[in-house]
Image (tube, rainbow, N blue to C red; front, top):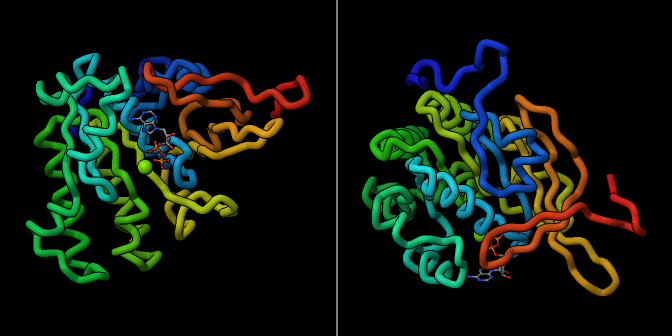
Length: 258
Ligand SMILES: Nc1ncnc2c1ncn2[C@@H]1O[C@H](COP(=O)(O)OP(=O)(O)O)[C@@H](O)[C@H]1O
Ligand SMILES: [Mg+2]
């Protein structure tokens, strides 16, 4: 049983409990899901499927009776929910029942009066406390922040981003949350986050991207890092279908690329 001080610890054999993402191919690569309590960066350029993957992760949790929270910074959640209606996997009833909670971060900025373009130390602490309080009140076991990049844009300084993320990670892990943080990067970025400090702090990095094959642009997913489990680092082709994200090995010249 998870407690605030000791969230979902390792079992007697030392194996950490897993959070099934519900995305079958991904759970297989990870050997049974994300180690519970991990904070994972979902990095990729625009249109690679970051938001869709994160939402499916929450929906699959909510379907099993977990409480889940989506902190939306870049898109108004009402619009997001409207766009999602074409995805069969997205279930409005989970939102109505309170299993999937959407929170608009710009609304939090307004309520807290965080109006400096670059947040002060006190404002950063207040924002952090508010995120953790809301996750606690919701009893959240899965949390998504879409996107971390937009929040970091207002924190700006590397050492403050590092401190914010360490406290967020510790706070959410203590609540027993498994967390996905969206990181928006350019097509040719040599790293997985805007400042570079973000990827060093998180427990895992999933990279989404594009690959060209015979005139098509394929969507690609790769597990770059995941603390607490061994995993393949191969590239997989993903398809965003109405029933959810489907994955297949990325074949190159008839052979799987590794
Ligand atoms: N409601 C939808 N129905 C079908 N396909 C969608 C829908 N929303 C997004 N997509 C497809 O998924 C792609 C990626 O969307 P998204 O997850 O928002 O990417 P990202 O968050 O990485 O920018 C879109 O470019 C589109 O092709
Ligand atoms: Mg998005």
